Image 1 (tube, rainbow, N blue to C red):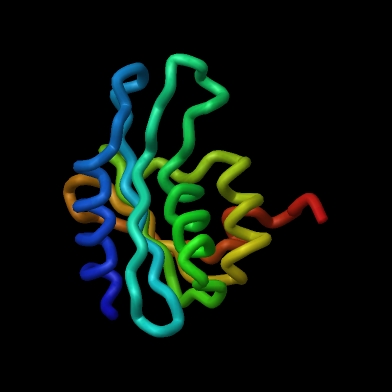
Image 2: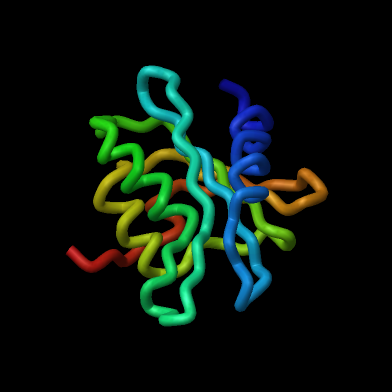
Length: 123
């Protein structure tokens, strides 16, 4: 699957985000080894620590469905923001060193590996 296609899946996921407090919607699309795409979006709660980022929603959903091997991930935000530290750690532990396409709403994107996102992980 081309990076642009996976980013479009992430764009779809972003439309499902529930971000009434930050108004910062994030969409994620995780491509499994067999070609399945699992979506994730951020979901906020008034009890802020209960909020879940799009990246972890996608990863945990994929794992709950029995997927454990991944090809790539796409993320989209209004400004191309990168994952938070907690997401980077979860990505490193569960995805391997896959490419991550980080896009903004204009369609511009950069490609980073998981290890580039978290060069000195907690292990």
